[in-house]
Image (cartoon, rainbow, N blue to C red; front, side, top):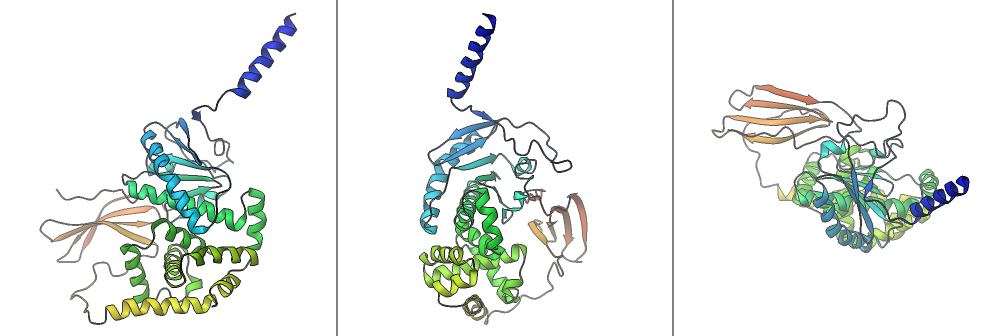
Length: 365
């Protein structure tokens, strides 16, 4: 009798578990069981809450509820727009993993086991399968751009390599796409063509950095690819992008895609792109003269970025931050003497971690 009662209770519990709805609280197990030495230091517990929308899911923790709601309002429209642009519909549901700030994102182990955390879009959006990891930096427009970049990368990966992990592994052996092709297209889809992009292209043309197109790496390759896709859309129309992706996937060759769709080789296309931009920037600046004086920063280090530049109220000093792949320094420069001194240093160099450009904050009092 006792044994029958226990069996009855067991089956009742199992039936209840199988029919009960999904819990609102969720944990990501990928990343909790990591290889030794691979897990990241976490300074707090994240108790995730799950939100289900029509075509995607969103995960957020305490304080991130308004961000998840924003994703629910915005992401579906962005998804439909990008699907139309690529002429492709997503396979399966997308998952947005929302972090309240970048510092929290840097603690996550999601994707660390497989190395997928290196799939970064301009240092912003991380992709792990159908998971899109995004963070809020105080600017909803940047937040939306991260969503667009994540959606674009997932759709392009599915289109070019297939939806399942098995398909992607098999296809990646046969089709190896360079950074300028994939990440450049993702960058273009996420932001379009802005004044900041225009300035980057102007600088690249004037310094002749983009003339050796296939030899560019990292961010330079992304910037150049962004501009090349912009040129393709302006010259051949939006429909050419989807056709290029399709023919490249079918032929397993980038060159064949350009020849079949655009009627020109990649080499000829890149030369036409350079000449097109030279006409815009070289002729536009031919009547301008350089300002007098020496550059403030003469020889910046490779991979070193400068930001948060603030001029003192009397115009005699300049404060700025330099960041070399994660290690930052805060400098104060005397504009009369040209001498500078370091006020603070922090962070550490890492090719795998996103670096936070919102810190340190620079302001004159």
